Length: 254
Image (tube, rainbow, N blue to C red; front, side, top):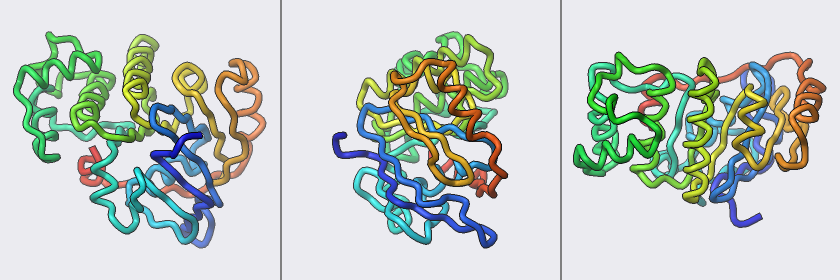
């Protein structure tokens, strides 16, 4: 594997006297899409929070584009974008206004025309670009989040349950948009329950149980039935505790 953009080596996170992430090692190179599968409480969101610098590990090594998010979270976050299950955007602003605002926070100036082009590339229909976010579906809001990532030219993208609550058509559109980011060289780490989407979009899959990576393989080495069988074989572990970022932290990460 080429030098990874996202790199966790033997990472341990403690919460309430127990390991919520247990000696986790995984790598995602530029242009790679890694699907981290696991049930509720498996440690998926906590793993993303470690990369974002919201949770500090007690052991192991973490690097985002060569930077340690625990020591320099601002620099590490500038290299990545985070798309949570519920995207923290401003409902009273339009898609274009949200995109321009979040880019300005990151030091980027976009014209309305440039913002509209990025939204269209992310799969948002032009008719919706100037509509308020309050009228957007969940899938439309996620496309704005993806457009922000494209505008910032980030090196890594973190997604937490990106297809949760989406209809099949919206999930497929999101899959194509994520694949487009990877084709442009972005390293993508996606925490999900969605086996079908994981199979469709990723090139490597890891299964997390009680904070430990219990299986890892190339996506094209298994079919859907085999993937489901492996996942279900590890689905009966007691749940661990996860640490959720605040809404303000989610906005900062985007």
